[in-house]
Structure formats: C-alpha cells, structure tokens
Amino acid sequence: RSRNLLVGVVSQLRFSQAIRDVKAALDAGQLGRIVSADLYMKYYRPQSYYAQNTWRGTLQMDGGGALMNQGIHGVDLLRYLCGPVTSIMAQARTLTHAIEVEDTLAAVVTYASGALGVIQATTSIYPGYPRRLEIHGERGSIILQEDTIVQWSIAGQPDKILEISNSAQHGHQNPEQISNAGHVAQYANFIAALRGREPLLVDDREGRNALEIIVKTYESAARQALVTL
Image (cartoon, rainbow, N blue to C red; front, side, top):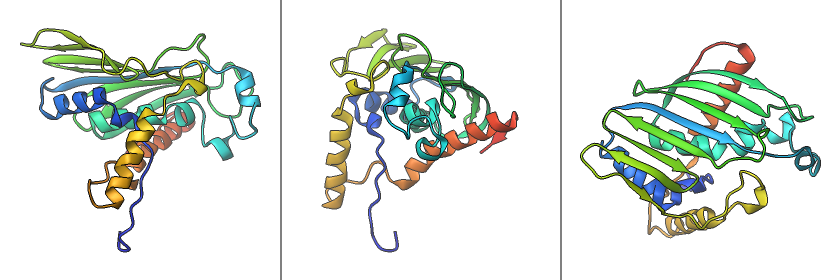
C-alpha cells in the first residue's frame, strides 16, 4: 500500500447478481438477527482426478484437500455474506481416495454475530451435488444453490424463487464445467480499479479472511480441539 500497488485475489463467486442481492438484503437487516449460516459442498471427484496431476491431493502443492481446493470459494462467500468467524471445531478424514489430504471434513463454526453454523466439504459423495449456502434469521431465510436463489422467505414479504443465473455450469461433478462468468466480471473490476474508475472489490485482506478460516479449521481438526480466530 505504501507503494500504491493493487493486489487482487480471485473470489469470483461474489460477482453474481444473486450474491449481490443477498448481500444487499443482509446489509439492510431484512432477515433480522442471523441465527445460523451453513455451507454444504458435497462434491465428487474420482481417484483418476487426483492421478491426472502430481500436485493434486498433496499437502505441499495443494495446500489441503476438499476444503482448501474445492471449498475455498464457498468459504469466501460465507465470510463475505455472514461476517467474521470467532471459533471452529472440526473433524477431517480421508475416506475414499489415496491422497494425503482430507477428502471429507465437517466443522461447527461460531460467528462474531453470535450465529452458529456448519461447514461440510467433501469430494467423496457420488454423484456430487451443487454447493448450497443457507442463511437463516429470525425474520427470514435465504438459500442459495450455486448462483441461484432457491428460497427467499422474509416475514412480511411474499415468498419468491429467483432464477438469477441458472444457465451457468458448475463443477460439483466435473471441474471442467465450472463457469468463467464470475472470473470475467472480477477481471473487469480489477482493470477498472487500475484505471481509477472503480474501487477494487476483493483485495489481499479480503482474500486472507477465507484463508484464515480454512487454516484454523485444519488446526482444529489436527488438534481435536476448539480453535479461536
């Protein structure tokens, strides 16, 4: 920052219209006090996926398993929408693959707001299911499946289902089906920020927030203990 440099971290899921709408609703307090926020990433990767590249499934090159590789963008979304996490209690296992990192993980998290939640990440569940993010408050609930809002129920408002971006492909079964639409939107923001036309929406500090949650989750699983952030 002293050198006036921009550092961006790819967090492409934030750039869908669905996420923008959910963020606006949360910031406006439409759900009331948040009670729980849960992230489910139940994906499938065959052993051949890990065998295709020597770095996959390794601690040194992959940095972790289902939570780090496949799950970091979901964790970023959870942190972005629901705020800081203050404690984590996790369990991690390698159940169905010959790899050195976890292919299945579950964690209970406490948010700074007082809300509770769970994070599940796996590459062991056939046939694999879309990422699901559930946010529940005292006055309403919003459920996202990938970049589609599948439930929007707020007291005093008619229930609605918003098909915001249902045409994009997703990678819960095949990583080659991951859409690049969010990446394109984020690159456009970065270029605009370089030119002084827009604020940079995801900088290095934002990127560290998701990484901290994952690192502390791994620490909790390794220590078999509650870890605070």
